[in-house]
Amino acid sequence: MLVELHTHLYGGLALEDLEWLAARNEPRWPIFIESYRRAYNSEPNISGLFEGTAESRQRLAATYYFLRPGNFAAFQCAFDLVIALSRTDPEELLEITRRVVGRQESAYAEYRMLLSPRETHESFREKLIALCQGLELASKITGRDARLAMSLPRDPATGRELYRVLRECQAAKRIVQDRLVAIDFCAIEEGYRPRDKASLFDEIISDNRKRPEQALAILYHVGESFEDKSLESAARWVVEAARLGAHRLGHCVALGVPPEFYLGTTRRELACERLDQIDFELREAAQLARAGYDIDRAALEKEAQELSATDPGRSIDVHYDSARIGRARAFQDWAMQAVRETGAIIESCPSSNLRIAGLGSPDWHPLARFLEAELPTVIGADDPGILATGLEAELEMVAGWRGVGREQVARMKARALECTSPALTGRQ
Picture 1 (tube, rainbow, N blue to C red):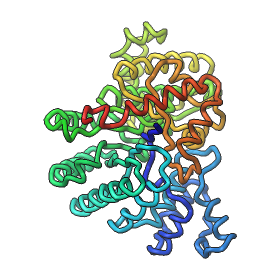
Picture 2 (picture 1 turned 180 degrees about the horizontal axis):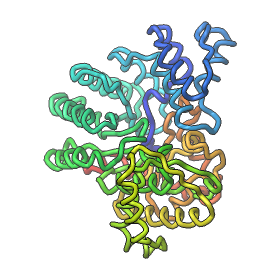
Picture 3 (picture 1 turned 90 degrees about the vertical axis):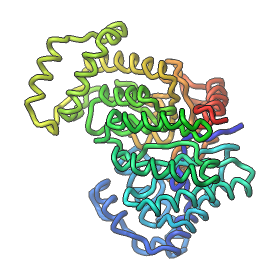
């Protein structure tokens, strides 16, 4: 049985879906144009993009598909084309769920959906219900089980506010009780530390205990993009999210990417992030030392004192020479075991990671290290429309990777069935 645990509803659109949206809605081109400028420092050619000719369809494909190694900004540009075309009104949501679930390869899938953080409580409630209605109707038509993981803004205050609206709607509407199975945190992660949502995680976990029949899994994208921090700090974020109680962790590139990928490069880390990392290493010093990551307490305390007197937003150069690479690997090895101890599941998205993280080659992908460390791992297609892939294609691809193979793929497929949100929260 094929189970898809990491896919985004609007990341699964086909070219014909984009054309349907463009014909239905007036495109909000400034959203896409500004995103394109940020990603490529040039102007996109949007003239005649939806004329319906073979040439315009070819240009649309070149604009939409994200097929080469890049970065999160380049990927976001492709997703912002979708955002520019969509309105996410209830009628649209019903049609999009019908289309996407109609192409669903798996017997069971959990679709993630992030609405605008500017939604009113009423519009958020209305769209949540429409999503659940669409998934239920599509499930009945196709015979495939489609569930919802509602994405919340990473900002803790807005996220908490919409979480409470979501719970109120869940308590009042049977269809939301049935279809909503998880809460997700996604999109840009820089600037949004996992620990800042500690109290929100506690509230979700507490509500799950009070109403186990309505328990919601916590899904958290982390360690996917980390432009503002060192590799070690990004791996620490994965540990922190797992320890807060996340049931499944999306991507986690920083946790297992071979650090040699960064050999000879210089990353930039914010002073506040470096302070957080120092504090973490001092607290975990004994465990880290047992993993071969020795701590110079006096040196770290002195560095922290100096950094505390500077601007927390100041950037610090972090150069990855061979010595730093060795220490980074030791830190990752420890971090993987720390995550394993929490029981959190890793959702690895191969094509997505190769392209968004700019890895390029499977040799740099963290999947083999996750499996070697015996981390419970499943495979997801992430955004199968934008990435021009699917779950079966992703599983077939990794079966040929060094350190993976068909036996491991079979295990990950079996594990996915055990790691659905209802299974992890005890709802089923």
